[in-house]
Length: 420
Image 1: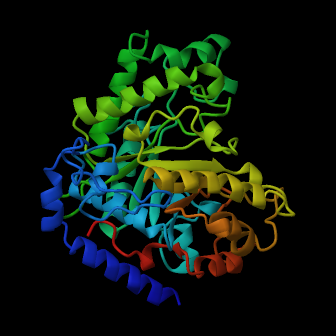
Image 2: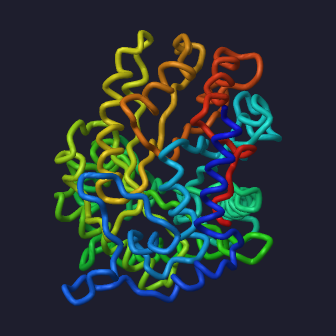
């Protein structure tokens, strides 16, 4: 049953990591640089079985991460998520502490239904980096910044995982991120203008400085920095965001991604980030999925957002969505990365009734069918009269509980401990 599986998983974690945040195993690997592979030193780099998935142990997890100087807690999170994917996945929700169905605030909507918060909290740098955020206590955007930081700290103290996306406004007027609301000039030039040497490159660097400031401020009660999964330029294969594929070449996209990582890591000394690469659901092959991939040394997490395949009431998109997620899962195995469904959900409102057995059968099949291995999945936010996670008394409430009570999904009350 579910509890016995968690016990086995916990015991394996404890044996590998030897518990506490001050563990000597992590203290040793923290000062070890990734070795250079040479014929004279064949044992310095962990061997990967040919044709098999490789799951790093505590001593070599750091060698597969973007940041070789990552904090102990960030290494622990990478290690646990990668190994967890063999049997389970975390269930999270965007803005779980600040956005609620029907406006009924208080506990997260997932907790209202299940008795537990989600295992992961999704947040956004959008308001934090807004041009109108002047840092004054009376400023609405600064107030949002403070609330987001408080919620991220609360999540970390509870043992949840923090992940941030970034709906970055275009750099010319700083007003929009949807191309439907931008001028033709802005659409065609915004992305290229923030590349190194571009007219708005300094503007972009200043936004990254704000990101770094916030990420470094998310500290738990014990003084440790919360690891943050950072998912910039998400759904980059579409045309609806100004960082989408029609507005830059593959080479330009890779260049900006690499700059973003190296600037945060090497110039701003941010060492508590895992970097997530997350296109939308257009890709069905490895080659297509990797067309904008900046390289293994710049990516920790391979993800995919998918809403469109979940829309058909008859479940016609289930097999296709599972096929696409299988591509991500296979690549994560081959490259020793973490796989995830980084955004998904069915938006239930008066015009869009929930398909029958949506959570317990359709979504579950997408996430687990054909031996897919993912570490986490994220529902988008609930708001006003629309939900992706039901609350008590609405359509799908009992079906969602059936989904959560299956062996694989994990929410906060079943959290095996990601930082210990």
